[in-house]
Amino acid sequence: MEKRKKLNVKAYVSIGMLSSIAYLLMLLNFPLPIFPNFLFVDFSDIPALIAALVFGPLAGILVELFKNVLNYIATGSQTGVPVGHIANFVAGIVFVLPTLFVYNRLKTRKGMTIALVAGTVIMAVVMSILNYILILPAYTMLMGFPDMRNLVVPAILPFNILKGIMMSFIFMLLFIRMQAWINKFSVVKGA
Image 1 (tube, rainbow, N blue to C red):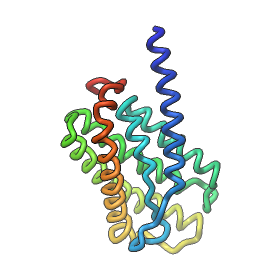
Image 2: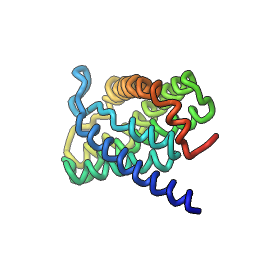
Image 3: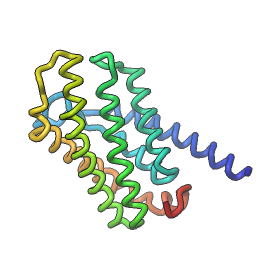
Image 4: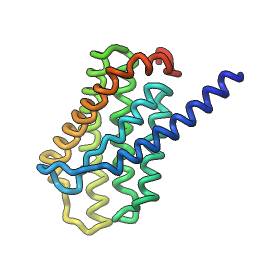
């Protein structure tokens, strides 16, 4: 019982720290010159992926939630409704969770590479669909923009693939150094 309490406190503190790091990384966003100026790359999903690998899927989801809530409180939203924050939250989840589930089946560096490719592809496809159905129409309705759904295939899909590749590359550099630590401290054994 005492060990479980310590583990929970450790998990809560770690989730809070990783959420703070994710929030700071979210502030360091930047556009890519060949894409529309409303698409930004940030590496804030990396702490969420670390949280998910060590503490399980709920921890990754909480890091994604907390970083977006902090960012919304600090910066607000042009629409008044946190459409971009909700999109970032969903994009993070559909990147982190598939990556976690594939890695938990393979548990090697090659397995992590396969997992990151799966996470990138799933994120790109799901976010393209959601942008077409919900996100871009919400911006059209709330901001009075013209219909931008024609940007899904030429801009949003390749942007999310490139963003996933960039995050995967950065994460693999960290993962190579952290793999033993992640496996040692992982609360979710064999999940």
